Length: 288
Image (cartoon, rainbow, N blue to C red; front, side, top):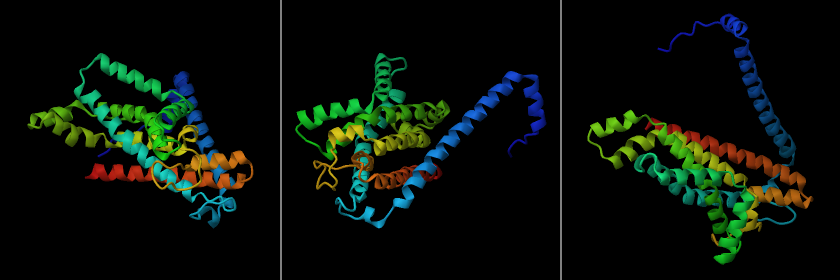
């Protein structure tokens, strides 16, 4: 049974009167929450009101041309780019975090260097990653503007994020879980992959969702690596634009601003769908 909370609003009010500083802090927190919620609702409402009236079936035609400026190729390219980036950065980030938390010695210099490097990479602007991807993958490797070059560049961008969130999720698992598993005779590897890792799935998925949101909304890095060709490439070595790049190009040209607003609605819907799907998977994994 849940404990019954007998504290009334009058009791809370008397407490704030006796301690005005607590009341001031509560007011600041409340105002911050209301301001954040208001800004979020304003942004969503602005995007929807500007974009929904301009949604049409021509925007979802399979082939792009200057008449329909279809976003369908960009939507497919976005899914491909997200899948490639997560396929590369996901296992690397998760396994790196497992090593840092479960296997590396506590207080090791290697752990400190890796964490400092990851935190530093997290704060680097995306345009810097884009320039690196262009110089290394596009020019030095000779791949040209391609989906693979864009995916590798994005994987470098989101790798520190996935690694750090996974690391924090693993650290939050109580040590008693590990001790109980060891007491029953399980080895280190089995304990990590059968006890610790499943318990940390919600935190890991939160990092993956954040990484996915960054991939979906990235523009600068992809302009320098994947290009802006409005087509579905035949292979990962072909050039293509994602939804965010598509919206940027349309708005930058100034000829299809309304269609760019409609693209923003679809992009917002895609992000919300990814968040819902990730939460659904996390609940399913926890139940099993």
